[in-house]
Image (cartoon, rainbow, N blue to C red; front, side, top):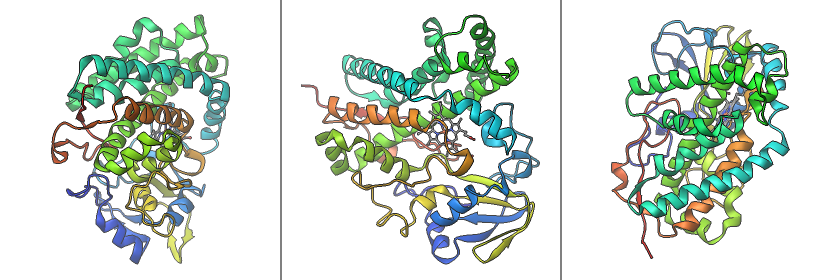
Length: 385
Ligand code: HEM
């Protein structure tokens, strides 16, 4: 599958995917390990595959779409995206009950506080500032701390470890440290429950191992994703100054702006599924055992679903996009992610109305070939009054 985004526009999917969508939205694809599977590039077919339970999400059935990694082991304990029914339903229903409206409302108040603390710190520091460690990473990191009930005293450690490290070696060490931390947090929550998702889950029949697995998975699912959306989303706004100005001048645009940025950027891509039986789709038969890669980014740029799809238009009604997936695995944390972005983007542009890149756009290092797309650094500057 073509993965690199074109040099000219760091936000667009590879052009080849658009050409495929026009000609054959369900096309055959040779995987790096030699497997002959499929590639989906239209919005309609992406939803059809993601919403069809005859396709499995289990890692051990799939072939990797971009790397020759050989047989893939099953997902770690607690990784919902690697489960099928009925195992998935058990975990998902336990978790869904913990992402309540009351909790999301409480979390909104904290997002507002945390966002303003970060903006104050940026103002004190003065320009230029790298927006990734200053703004995009700490907001989701602190919100995951709230969600999991990480004690205040440990948050500094947590935040340091959660920052997007440079080298793969450092990333692995940080991740292992966080995993160990969560494993120790579980018995602590069992002994002294507080008002958070992890404590709530200790009253279920889940074992400590399972709880640690879920905690670690939530951490992985909620950190990099939202951090990259905040940073890459800001980059996209700065590259489209009229859209930046629209949000600055009309904060009521925040909700539609967030949906449109999610659609336009589709940072968590692609989805991968494997047929568990022969399945007829779009006049072709996907045989049992064949892997299908779903380019949600190409689906989100489908002109049949979103007119003029390559234009970032914050006033567009981008509902029905695939950036949070679709079907039984659709993102469980999407309300939290929305809260974070709906608060953070308008607050940033209101506080720094003259925000701009501190280096030429071509010099912004992108996270190529990462699971989650984004920027590694985003140096920004502004006029000090
Ligand atoms: C902008 C930020 C985010 C994006 C773009 C995003 C994207 C996604 C996508 C595409 C999936 C589906 C994966 C698949 O079908 O295999 C997913 C699943 C999931 N996400 Fe998110 N996510 C975000 C934020 C979060 C947050 C903040 C949390 C929680 C703290 C979270 C928790 C989850 C969980 C638990 C799943 C698995 C659901 C399941 O398999 O049933 N996500 N996310």
